[in-house]
Image (cartoon, rainbow, N blue to C red; front, side, top):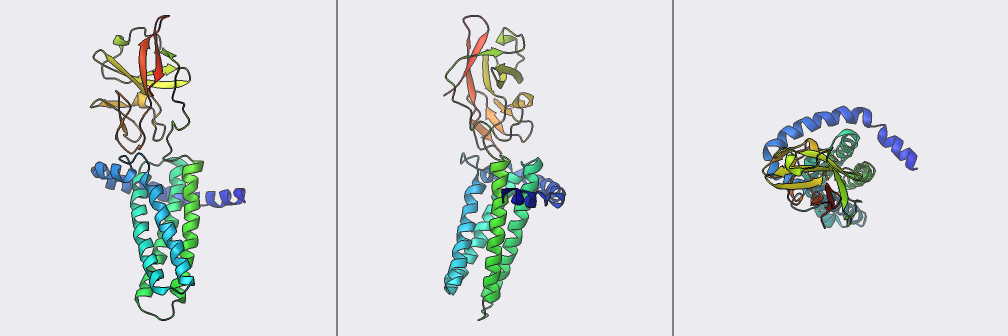
Length: 288
């Protein structure tokens, strides 16, 4: 069953990939001038993506609508359909904000997911229109609601793949330990941190971890170089107002402590403390 479903989803990539690239361009143009609103929709303030939290609402409301329709509770079923439509619009807006920073296969699958949800939304709007028309025969309206529910389930399945299979909007440091040991810092032969260029990202290594160092005066700060949002290389980013900006999607993290200052990331960046090693050189440890 799993292989069959995977092949079925992948078979849609032929049309979803170019359609997704088209949508990505106009959505980027739409959201670029309103970054504070986009951060709000991403969930930067929430510490959690807003879109997956929103999607539970229309799915639950639509399931309730189907049950009420089948039970003959006409008025309650109509209200549930109307609520579903409102919740779907909210989920669509937050999903569009995440979509602008989704790349590769994740964007292609997100396009299939979004297309199914739009089709379901159209069916629900038609169903609501029929209900509002006062037709005594509600068979078509109820049937459209049931079909929309099945389409929503299919769309939710693909949306789950975007997160759980492809890791979109998942913290790239979810499984990284807090760190209690000091690890030797390798800066490519540099032995004096004060020799690092001022306000310029410098790549370093601490065991298996890639770090980015930034010197500001006599202070040197260190963050993990892999962006928590989508894995972008922060060591190739730029320093803006005391923050490191990711070169991929422009998330910003405060260099002093890794606190998130600008989305689309919704997670803080691991920060490291630095000290001189007894054997010479320097060593680092992840901050608690």
